Image (cartoon, rainbow, N blue to C red; front, side):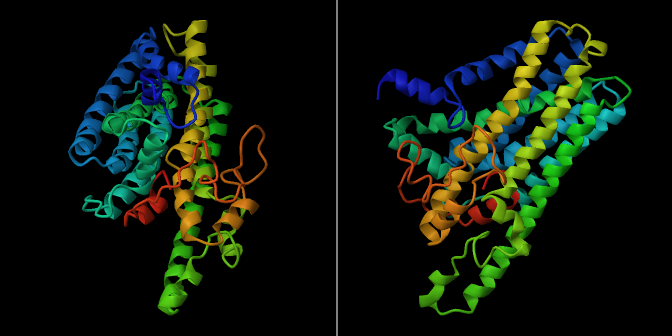
Length: 383
């Protein structure tokens, strides 16, 4: 591939984010820093510095030494916790809003970090890197890009999640922590309700998956070695499509759907701050600031969707599943990948053996299984 192609691939954010969206994303930190609202600007800088320090020692240096991207599964949720703490301590907004919005973020990030910290211990990843990061590397090589550049791309991809905690994901939190209006707008109430719904769906899906894995483990102990292929069940597909697993009959990744809904909730909370910003965002009342904040908030669910379906979510997980589980292709054909209902303008990927069958975006190279993938599927952000 040409030098230009390598540069474009190197700077690509996510899997299917357009060049224009990438350009906007790379520009946002500069515009955030120039917002003429002193309190918001100070909180933005404090959070950015703390995120960079945290990622440097917990993610980037371990990645440099070991070559494993899995440490970002610890660094990203801990960064969310740090964002919540920064909002509570350094935000100058109304204390009820500050504690409420930052508190649910602490709960959101803390759950994922605690699960990863306990279940990944002692963090040596004996089976190799998590399969989703093996998948990312294989896609890079399969697309004709230089394998010698992969360590640099891995650093940039993990730093992208640091960037998210500084800008895109941070936007609604920074706004809420800076808003000193002493009442909760109805749009904020809507956002909080949506977050609660997403949180409930994600936790219910994870509990159903845990019950499925326990049932599958018991079944494997009761059959002969030669019959173990019969125990590679598929959650959401007969016989594991009963009421106990009903969320997994609606879509193939209801836990991801719950995560997306939660961040849509944070996005709506952010729009609640923008609606009332003329009353509290001193120095930030211009039309340009409104466009900047609305653009950032709109990118939040867009980036999350790309991540959860194509980048490190459904695609790498299902590449494993279609090889290991004979019935998984049938499950794909009958069940949507992310949304439990028809949703316009999105691809539901009900193609058997997706993403292997997708010649443009898939890869059919074998992945080395990691003993950490199972727990990662259960309690971290990406399956």
